[in-house]
Length: 416
Ligand SMILES: *Cc1c(COP(=O)(O)O)cnc(C)c1O
Image (cartoon, rainbow, N blue to C red; front, side, top):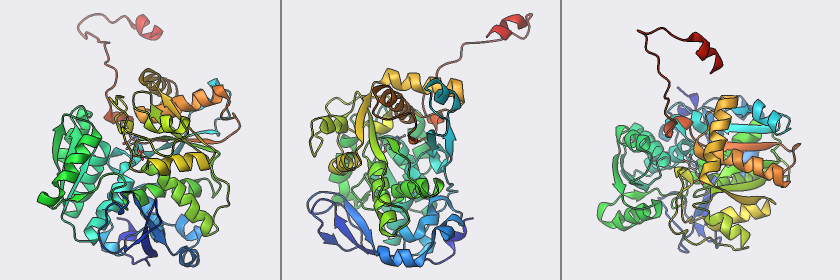
């Protein structure tokens, strides 16, 4: 059991703020979008955080992302829901690095598949569900491409909250099953994630459920923010040169950007930022299109398709926040076709023994391309986000068989 659960920590939240207009909102009650229809961001008294903790204290703690409690909105420790969160490892891909003529210390995968429910959605949903518990909410609903639903189901069931979840009917089967098995009511919808989101929104009044859609409540992003805190801590409070992030709703990218600002404000890091790279799939690339066209918002991408379900998000309510972070950081946005995503997954698994999820594989494909095109240099340190365990996705069939009643041709096994 994490000790964080039983110890009281001070809370430093001052208020919520509209990410578009800066208008202030009260923090101690359930909130959705701002009046302008945009995400609310949590603001803290950073000077007080600076005097309340040290890097060394944080480094000495356990409990995965819950160790950043001073940077998080939960006020009562009894509302912390612990399912075995861990610090996710930074891993090298030595064979890939040597093929690309890169020092293997420069090419790093952050493997988020080690978190509860097998994806980084655990970070966001742990916080959203903890806050729902704090506010006494009893019924949560969301649209999902799979992983968010699984994380919400697990954390909410553990906390004794009811959940209703809607997913596109071609969501990976394993995700739909794990959601149901972890206590949610899950429905397959003949549409995309934004169509599922509309069902959640339209049903709010009749059902009384609380909408936990990406960025439509203020706390999932605070959970995802811990990726930025964790990267900084793991790299000894020096940030990498580039971060490749598979971008759907963009919560993680926006969250890390927010984390870096908060860390600079309390004096733990300087003003240097990584270049943030938003990676999408060619079949669903609204952010890439808006980036290339110099636009501030990204309209709905029609007929979205990619087998990388986590980044099949045709429209993002935080589009302008993603685009700002990418531009302000000097980063870029890139779309990768599905066949290149799966080639990358297969190559990394075969050669380096690391089974990436397709979304994570997209970041490796994007890294390779960026290196070729010169938009990053071989001596720059790059972090690639592997957001989920590769085990949740369809894998190639194995055709080899052995008939144990017949003589075995061992020589043919040597050649394989
Ligand atoms: C949700 C998800 C993403 C996209 O994350 P956002 O922060 O919403 O952009 C990428 N990959 C996987 C596996 C996901 O589950």
